[in-house]
Image (cartoon, rainbow, N blue to C red; front, side):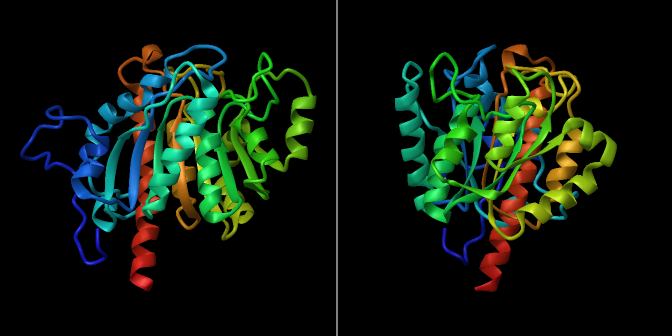
Length: 323
């Protein structure tokens, strides 16, 4: 899309009911219908890296279905994201479910292709293994990036059953590969039992700061967002959100639930407080609809992706206006 073209937005829900037609994210056009996009929403139906309950391979489509109810104006950010930038659904990255190493390579190559068009990525998982190849691709374009990781778990363990690539290891691998800016790494929403205190020691050595779900509860979303903005500064930022950062009351449909998590309201408010950060791409992962009911988890995930997309669309519009 050229800079003077008007973005093509969602299907008009006053003419075609929300429940009718194909379920693209937010009822937006497919990428092949618009040619190029400023933000490409892509699914990665892969969950071969999970350590407990499977099913996140169906997460992307569940989020798309739940996103039918999203509307084009975001009052919390005072923005109409789909009018500010061309956002399109890029479909799914089809990966080998029987070979994790090959799947990681496929995701990385597909992300390279999409980022090479100038798009930013809003990726719908899939399990958290997919964050590593996405970060590799983003770092290839932007250099080592700041990482904001919303999760009940650290995901900086070394191996599971000798496997280096799993949903519990992506950020250790990312640190080892030098694709993260280790002066600006944060976990948000962590809680629950660990294998030992050494888990925290190792995590700190990698450069991560931790904001637990209890910290969010005690200090509030605004103060946490202020702290995170200060740590991130003006670095290029990647946000990775495991939906299990939310309490099981707000996200029952996930593979490794932990009691005592954040509310969906707290997550959304923290994200809105990061609107001034330079968000270059993001993911929302670990939605496992088989364990969901009434679309609670996928609705929360769709709104989370909507806030992230709004942040990127606003920044894209500002950058275009500055040229």
